Image (cartoon, rainbow, N blue to C red; front, side, top):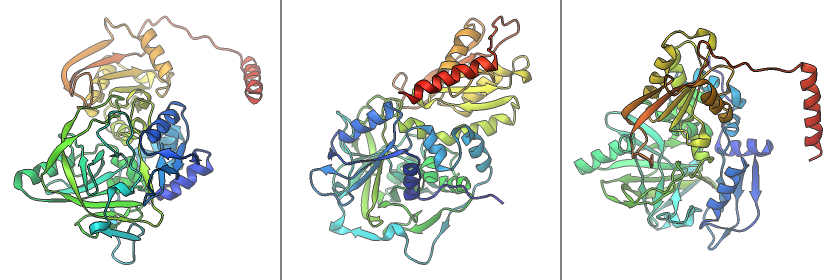
Length: 463
């Protein structure tokens, strides 16, 4: 039987990271316009804590609490599951082996229905939705997870940015191949309606699962259940035919009817501001929430930032499991969030298990399993794949570009890539030690290292 993880509700996660010294409460009054984005930029650059903000400049808001930078460093994602950062890949790989379907609660009142707002009570401007950056098209919901059903592929929950147009309309950005875009395109072509909900402030397992791309038909709530070792409990919405996690902080119910509108600009995970695009319009029919709801905002911008850390975290475990079946010498797969995650991949191999051509084949396979990658680097097992300094040292000293690189033309990447717009090449870099490698790494006696560590420890305690 699968044991339950330590992952809990959104509020339990906040309490946990606060007890770990990873959460601060900001007493200073902040303007919803730009101050929140500036704070997140500074916290991200400093590898700093998450923050709770309760004092906003301007009119009184229905929700007076905003949580930001929750998933900044990768260690807080690991904390969500009660594991260490170096255990995260193995933990996720094992948990995702079998999905656990969600279960709908048919009796009792769910926390997300403590308060129900309909009709004239609906006003998105009552919520702490930041104007994040200079040049953004408007306030943006960035931690909203959209839930909708496609007639063929079934249910899906995923992160989609949402520009607030007014009191009851949101422009929701969707990539061309995403589940929600397929559903809304079908509604537009058939002049039909797609019921949906945007949930804000959900269990960490759901936020993390929804940030990764699984195959169409593989419901992320079931993946979240697998991560927790128990079903995610859901409840039916009040005005649309959608089930949402029962302990969600805020639920925005509504539908798509085929209307599209200009949306953007907005600073994305690449660090660059996107142009204005055309996106489907989400029309709000109700807002339900817990008592004293906590609004959640995810900061997007130049790495390092939590979007890059959070984005596609589970895909590394999925790719690792898939590749390991064919390449048993594989030891780890990582995409460094500090340089954008989607574009650079590192595979660590067991150096004593290589044979002619196998590393180059693994590099090609990795680029296919994670198709957004533009650069794939193979390193030995004496190189820490989570340390970019070590990785680039391996590239600099173990790779001869004449024979150790391969270039593949005209492949896909993210449509948000500012250098290509989605059609790109890929460079595969074999940075492992080859036959006749001449480098030798000297060591030190244990006694000498222990003396040096004591000197360093004394300095740290005095500074």
